[in-house]
Image 1 (tube, rainbow, N blue to C red):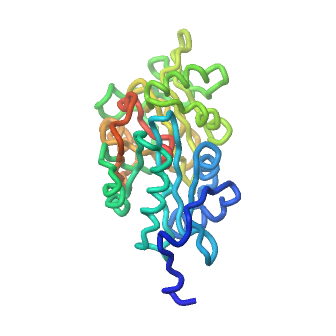
Image 2 (spheres, rainbow, N blue to C red):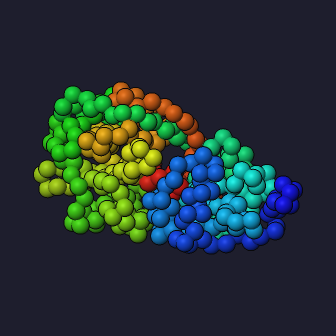
Image 3 (cartoon, helix red, strand yellow):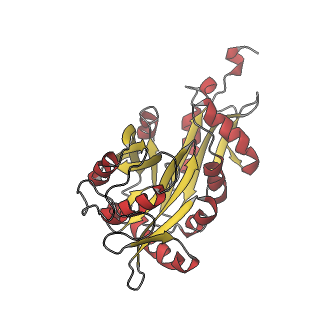
Length: 309
């Protein structure tokens, strides 16, 4: 079969809903684009979201896209991939159009690379913030030190246990679920209970930051193993001090480099990451379509992951 006959036009094959049986094909598509295999991330998308793809008549997938619906008014798009052999044939536009047709007028968000951003802009997405990926071997700060309030500089809080101001970092328990759901609803601006309920089973750690008196929850965070790294997310916290305490708890004893996604609205977190041994590796653009993100973005210190917002 010649290279010309291998080409697929966006009108040749339909966009189909994929299922867990397509996991291997999805990972192969990711590897085709230089992504490390992420079975846990794909499984979460299959369980909590919708994955669509274009099947290649020659075998495997020609492209994919994932959609996560939250409330009727909010959605996230990720895993928008087109196989290298099928680039520039309109498949990316077909996949994105299919996903957007599922959300009607909902506010929709995504993280865009410089390669994908022109397509997203043509489809009506607009830049809302930037996101810098920091990676490095985590170096704890002085015991008991705390980061200052939002916008401040370097600092961290204690570790997996207590902190200098008495804040307790501990694993999530079933008794925390209601408080976590309420905080997340206010901060993220949509109901993520169905996804957060899966985090204790799928993530390596899921921690809360609690006040010792009365145990009120001031934030929570999870971590995931991927390609030899420890990925942090989501990170929801009352302020920067709570966020860095949670991140320190996630990194404690992990034995692997930490990876965090830092929004431009959080310069203090970027300074803290650099002071703790992490370096900026890449930058993407956080984009929205249909309006602004709801909730309290200033208290969202890290996405669940870049595919699900």
